[in-house]
Image 1 (cartoon, rainbow over the protein chains, first blue to last red):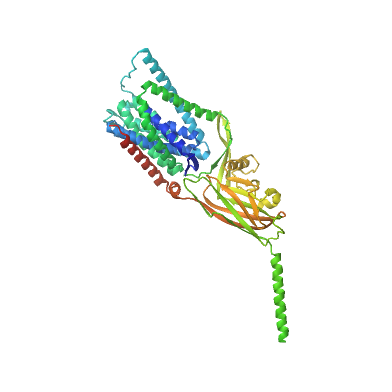
Image 2: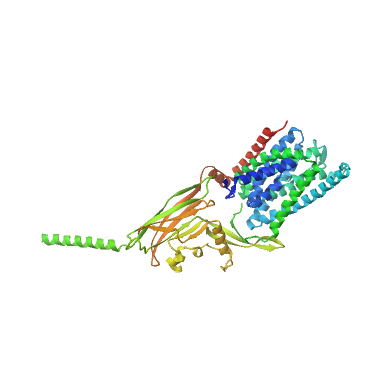
Length: 309
Length: 260
């Protein structure tokens, strides 16, 4: 029983449970090559951390994983810095709005339900899409057909917008508005969910901006650093809901778990990995949904009165 | 003349001495008290602490040690702050917080200790103004005008009891001889920081004879204090340091584990 007192959350947690949680998320993110924040925040909430603390601390932990991920991608020359900066400008603005929204809902006592609900919707939709896609891929390989290849994009409406910028690494000459708007939406969601938002920005970059796939991962990681760093600072200053002791525990666990996860991931096929991840994502969504639908054991709850920022 | 004056002086002296002695016998009981710890430091290995309150009764009139006509009640109070109590309701199929009630002055910690069931020690009219007992606590102004008993107040007390921040104990005070007594109270791991006051009340036959007050300070020390101070007094520095820490952790992980 190694209890650790969290000075900002003002609760005691078990040291091994929190290290284990960080390691499990690190393992999954190493295995699947995802940030893991979208699983970390729900798991923190399940283990009794108040949601406002969970999102702020989750964002802080993702700064660490995205820095090491982005460094590895930068060495391979896979970051479009110009695109990353445009996305980040939008992202930081979105994060600001997201933190304001969570703060407002927290004072009204609705932050818990709101965060859970947004998670149920996002994890539900993404998990279902991944499940269908990976099942099809598994079925296709069983039938002996080759994996589907995507046709390169033609000119679409996005190319008609003003404020054109040249993004050299992405080999794109497009308006700065779509990446800016995508940045805002991702920043808003990432700050509400306490996640990096890679699961939204990666498809957006591939399908909407038509960026080359090998540039997408590095650039998204680069952008996630700025969005999660801004989210961390904003929660710390506006909501006082960042617990650095919890973040340190999660980071230590995450680094260790990540190394094992990367090795485990290499032993599984791509579509098997996606099937597994889809099942985990859906399981978390269902668990959150049950929490919203089942009558709580205690109808009453206490909270200190939080003054405005 | 001289002898008369001396005799008068002597008589006055004897008389006043005698009066003094009589007054001494008549003087009302006084209670004195203190706490085993005046300062409690919370650091990362803090798992709660037991504090001992002790005291004595001066000018005791107890005829024998077996027969203790005195009753003692102790009240430990933490700092006050506003608290909001929320009740979940089913809205559109989802359980979310509905009605709420804010209480402006709720003690962060409140414990009553007594030498026997305190409602048997004195009447409700005596206990109420002293704020002895959960039901006699004044939580200050509430957010809505009507003070109807709608379950919020009772739930606040129940939830605080569950967190061991509200305690009532009927047999926590014991007498040692006829004038010494001691009581102990557990401060749990989640004990809030701030200045605490302890009030010791001496009763006999349902009447308050004397009271005594002392205080103790609960504060964080070391790393806990540093984090707490940074988070609440210098939140920008705290946030930036947290980001810097995460970035160095990421850099460290990358340099240590990179496979090239």
